[in-house]
Length: 556
Image (cartoon, rainbow, N blue to C red; front, side):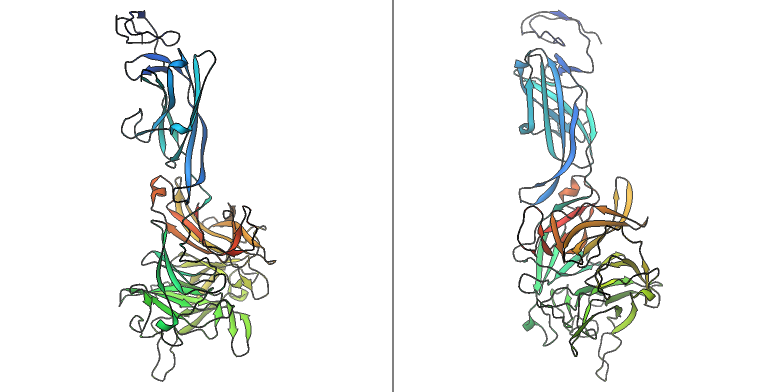
């Protein structure tokens, strides 16, 4: 496009390079407007030329927000060079961007400028070019941006680069960051007993071992606002004699929905006290009434849960659907069994189904079919098994309503586990076990590990992974490595280590993130959580391992 003007007393156009007109000075000029031409936003002056903006950084990092909570920050760095008549006229350089407007300018709706504190610029010795660069933090994740560089003159003219830079920001993945630590009223601890209510979609946390004692408080984590809420504290005086809750850790729990009462009961079973002595004082908690359950809450009028034959700690529990619409089966077992008569301890290989509806006392005063053996994980009962699974303080992760994965732990052969099993419930209420492919050789056998399951979409692909990490090895070393098993492909891969915290006895669970982090474009919404446990930090902490109250989130 050619332009030719002779207009006295009014400056309407400027030279691309080498000349700029003062007000009141007539001139005739003819110049070619190129895509690189800088044009004033006020009067249409051609003010110079611009090089293509170059992205110098496109990444994410961890940072601490105003609440001193660790969060994720996606940010860009850009660098630009403009050729102008005289750099002494320039008073500001920068970048304006938008996620919506394809031609962003300052003060337009949906447009923002880079933080001026992060802009650096230098003028050359000849005063005819200027180089500047800047960073913008706290951007949306994996989102298209429209960016324009600009300079501002002493006269207040803003001259924009006509070339709009279109760029999609990065998507964080395989990263840990710290969430909101549990509050002071929720002391640090290991071996917390957890269960998830599928009806309510929330995870509950009971007890655990602190520095000198165990606890009997119940908490819930709110993933929407990253907060912890205490629901109740159970004291022996509040319960029925000999059947009430006791402070404990390393027990197990499952949830049962009582449709007659429209209430969900949390069954808390087994565990040990601060001295490591096992308990058989099982009980229920009424979510609806937020209290230790009593005969009014229980479907069959019981005050408590019938204990296993022997007190057991380090056991696991889960609920799983049986085929042919036979309903949900509650399963508990394994762990360290304590024979009170002989003071002998032994690792329990059995799993038992617990029938809530039949947990009652018959007319002759005996219990009726409360616990039924539903199988064991000894090698003769497992498909493809060539080693015995670790039983004590193993881990169980629910994959779906029909499947769980069990693995690691202290084995009955005095070895630690590195084998994992897929467990399903058969139509007769028994279990069907299948050994998963062995993890890589550098996956260390361990006990007291933690993990979770995530099924999510990421960058257009669907993933279904079981994750496991942390724990203790055979020499008592505390671990922080982290692994994923791809259920669809049957393959293992090592992931980013579990932050800078080395620990065992942690708790793992999954959440659905709905807060501002997701609003910034981070996917997937489903995340994993590792929290609490006993260990130490890698960043210079020299004290002995201690119980923790920190909470870490994993973005796959």
